[in-house]
Length: 169
Image 1 (cartoon, one colour):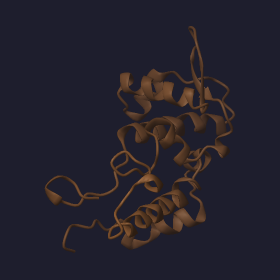
Image 2 (tube, rainbow, N blue to C red; image 1 turned 90 degrees about the vertical axis):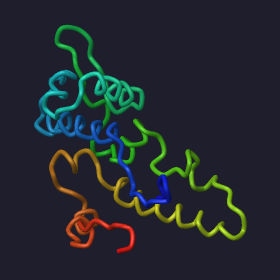
Image 3 (tube, rainbow, N blue to C red; image 1 turned 60 degrees about the vertical axis):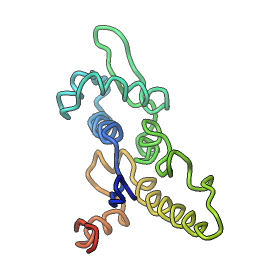
């Protein structure tokens, strides 16, 4: 992506998405262990080093999306509202941040270019498809168990995937 002064910058995963996934890993690990108790926001905040106030808003977003349920009261907290096998990383990212790929706030299929640049739209669509291939096939259970789907694992073990790219290289 082109940033200020024409410098290239990479895909950004927001702190909101990162924090949401980290909190959900904590909650899902309890689900895997058949622990029926709810988890307080304070406990999630401490366990993952997430600012408590920021986390409260994220948990509310996940509740509105139907991923989490809250329990009020003295022994209140958060628990999964759905089977974590059915919730992908992409679902979580969309719940807290909206579309996975947008160009200046517009979804790639809705971007309008002149005839000389229209090919760029297909690049954005292909990039979104590649992201979906990873993010939609990795579930909360995969993350909680630390075992990624074969295709994602294969990509993560590719030595080239770990190499940073800088302009001109």
